[in-house]
Image (cartoon, rainbow, N blue to C red; front, top):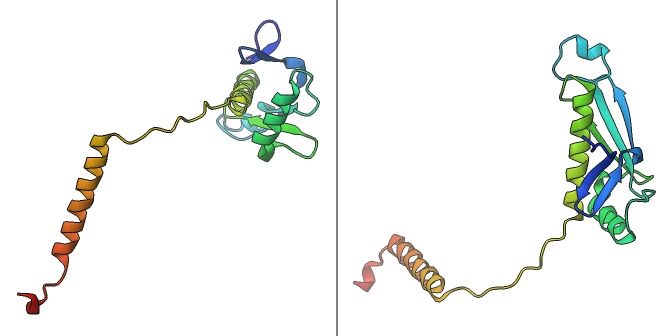
Length: 147
């Protein structure tokens, strides 16, 4: 999945060299019948976030915060891909998922600009509120003394 230059593109400004990622092939379940029990097609991708020279300190801090639940004690992220029958396809899938995970964690959402409800939406809300109140009032037991 890496590009021919050996980089995994995360964002337009960030690319991580494939040399920073370590891959391990293991046997795993999934499609393939008995063959899958003997072939090491399942891929485990590991990347040490804390020691990566590709990241700036603000990026590293953001990733540590946003991916804390995925980090082990050494600061390593581990991804496993084993849905496909071939090692190459699983490796590509693991790299794709890794890039999506890191890009998503680095994404900074624009600040929300508070808006005011429109006059029409306020009228609709109050009309709905009145209709609900009327409906509930009509459900109440009628007191014969009031008639």
